[in-house]
Image 1 (tube, rainbow, N blue to C red):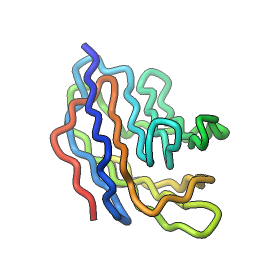
Image 2 (image 1 turned 180 degrees about the vertical axis):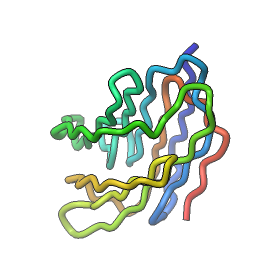
Image 3 (image 1 turned 45 degrees about the vertical axis):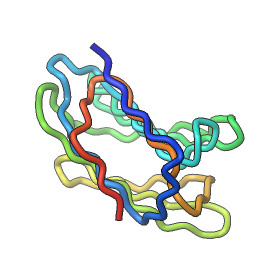
Length: 134
């Protein structure tokens, strides 16, 4: 069964977001999107557990940016998982540092620069327990 959590109109000024929850048994993947709204995403984070990769892209003005692929075996179906996203922005882009459940990290460069996060969407085989912004 697919799960969905949508938070809109949040307008929270934050340098990092931590998401904790549980992967469903038999989980194949999920999507976690952070941004201003559905058309302007700082990051669309999509672990594909079947293929052992994480796909990331940004979206600006409704148009998807290039998709980047990162190898990962950090997610196990039926277990708890914690991810964090830290942001360092400039006038033209934002560097997102992603920390995975096994504490490995990777960098994603987004062409979106936001003053605050107003939109969080989590869909798929992940049940959110908490969202913390700092």
